[in-house]
Amino acid sequence: MSTAARVHDLNPPEDRAREPFDVARIRAEFPVLQECIYGKPLVYLDNAATTQKPRAVIDAIVGFYTHENANIHRGVHYLSEQATMAYEGSRNRVREFLGAGESAEIVFTRGPTESVNLVANAWGRRHLKPGDEVVITGLEHHSNIVPWQMACAATGAVLKVVPITDEGEVRLDDFAATLSDRTRFVALSHMSNALGTINPVKEMTALAHERGAGVLLDGAQSVAHLDVDVVDLDCEFFALSAHKIYGPTGTGILYGKRDWLERMDPYQGGGDMIETVTFEHTTYAALPHRFEAGTPNISGAIGLTRAIDFVDRVGIKAIARHEDGLLAYATEVVSAIPGVRLVGTAPRKGAIVSFVLEGVHPHDIGTLLDLEGVAIRVGHHCAQPVMDRFGLPATARASFAVYNTRDEVDILVAGLEKVRKVFS
Ligand code: PMP
Image (cartoon, rainbow, N blue to C red; front, side, top):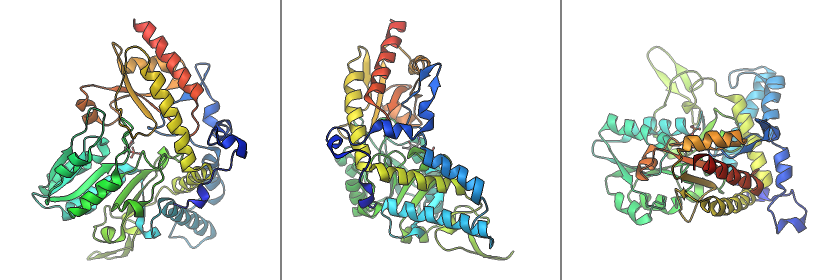
C-alpha cells in the first residue's frame, strides 16, 4: 500500500492534534447520511454489514453507464477499449492498495464469499487428500467455514477449529497447538465481524508456514480499518469486499500468490477465461483471467477504485485513529448502561461493539432503535458458532466507520436507555 498517498490533507495543522480529520466534511461526502428515518436524522451504525458510499463512488458508477458502458476485453471499438482500460486500471489500483507484486495476482470476484469458495474449490478440491487437515478459528464468518466443510467432505480432509477465549480472542498457543504436520491449509479471519477481534495474522501465518501450510486471510472487515500489505503479511491468499470499504456491492477481490494461483484449476468455465476452445480440448487464459469467467461487474470495479481513492485521501491510519476513539468511547458508555453485557472484549479490536441487554431480545433492541433513526445489526451475524460459544442466539452490534461521531454514540446510548425503560 502506498504510504505516501495515505497522508490526510483535510484539516488545518492546528486541528490535527485533536481530530485526525474533519468528520463533518467527510460526512458531507456521503449523500445517504443526510437522510432522515421516521423524521429523525439517520445514525448509521451497521458498517460491518456494509458501509455507505461517498459521492465519488456513486458518480463513478453513474459516469460509467452514462459515458463509457461497453463490455470489456473482447471489443475493438472505442467504448470497449475505454471500459477495458478502466477495469484493468482498477485491478492495478487494488494491487497497489494491497501491496501485491503484480496485477496477475489480483482476481475480481463477487465478494469474499466467492473468493473463499474459489480457493476451497480450485485449490482445496484439487490438492487436499484424505487425512489432511484444514484449520480455521472459532471466530469465522460462515463464508470462511462452509466452503471448507464442503471441500473437506469432498476430499476426506478434516476440519480443525481453534477455540476462542471468553474475551473472544484466538490465543497464539491454542492456534499453534491446533496445527500439526497434517495441516495443509489455514483459513483465518483478519478481523471478526461478530466481535471485532483482530487476530495476530502475521504471527499465525508464520506458524502455519512452519508446518508447510498455505494461509488464506479473510480481510472482509479489516481492509477498511487496518493498513494491509499482503507481502508483509506473507499470506498465500487475501479476500476482501468492495462494499465494506465504501465501494459498491457485488464486487470483491481475491489476492493470491502467483505460484499458488498457477497450481489451481479454473473455478468456473465460460467466456473470457479461455485461450482456445474446440469440442475436444480447451486451453485456459493466463492469470488472472482464467479465474474470471463471464462478463464481470465492470462498474463495480470502477466504483472500487474510487472507494480506494477515498480511503487513501483520508488516510487509513487517520481512519483507524478516529474509529479507535469511537470504539473506546462507545465501549465505555454502552457498557455503563445497567443490564448491558459486552460480547467480545479482546484487547485488540476494530470498531465493533457487540452486546446483549438483560431481559431484552436483540431483535427488540434493533426494532426500537430503528424508530430513533439508529441502524444497528441484530442476529447471529453469519457467525453462529461464535454465538454458540457464548451461549447466545444473537447479539446487538453497533459498528463504526470513518463518518461516525461521538454524538451518534450518545444517540445510540439514549436509544438504549429508552429500550430499557420500555422493558423494565
Ligand atoms: N467475512 C467476514 C468477516 C464478513 O464480515 C463478511 C460479510 N459480513 C464476509 C466474509 C462475507 O462478505 P460478502 O457477503 O460481501 O461476500
